[in-house]
Length: 189
Image (tube, rainbow, N blue to C red; front, side):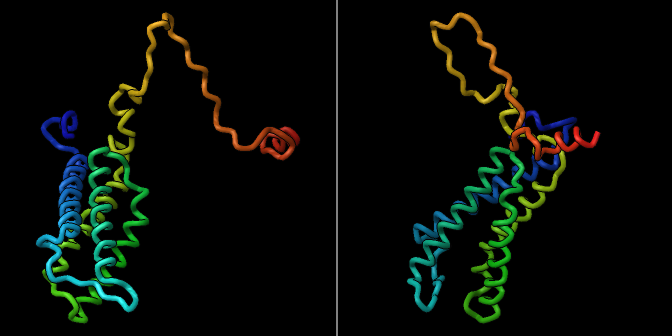
């Protein structure tokens, strides 16, 4: 991932953040999978609710942990701008912090159990930071960075000549006509 990212012996900030996000994503994914398997992380923690099965809530929590870890890994490996995750993660981390403080102050959970939430929060802070870095290789899609195009091409043996692709028309959402800005400008002139 860092190949080509080194410039004069220095690692760009974005590259270091992506490596950190990959590590946090791997840990978060492992925590979620361990939770599903009932491993060390799962020991002694129960969710309770008036009309909900604690096992079902535990599974939903594990699914979220796996999804968040996979999302962190995806962003880190693809090196794309993660702006789309910020609103969802803000709501998730905000509620997680509020509920964790409530559980801790109510004596329903000990502080060591909340340590695993630190990886979600650290990943969230990395995502917010990466979404705000201007320019650089963060702002260009992976296909453009490679210079090889999309990689999806078909070549057939009977094709001897290259066919020039038709030029793509610009985006036009409103057909030309009396209610468009162009028509209003023409009338005003």
